[in-house]
Amino acid sequence: MARDEAVIGCTGELLVGTRGAAGPGEVHVRVRGGTETFLAWSEEPLPKGATVLVVDSRGTRQVDVIEWVDPLDALAD
Image 1: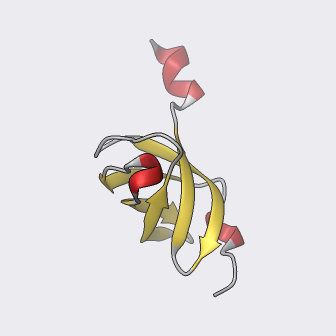
Image 2 (image 1 turned 90 degrees about the vertical axis):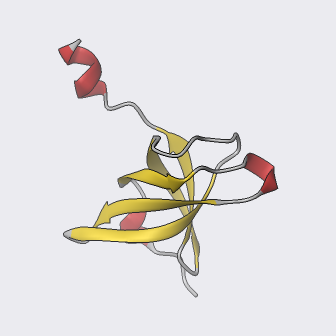
């Protein structure tokens, strides 16, 4: 399946934590006016509930993510 360019740059919340190189988690991503679920891969393990940013698409409903802190939220503190 082709890369899903629309999901790159979107944020989401991990429903299942990632395990780094040991395996993917699952992420709920806000995209296309709704939400969709993808397998989520990350370099380092990330916990369930973490907010993430999609940095790449692997196709077949799989994405690469990094932990994300919204800079606007940081300004509010």
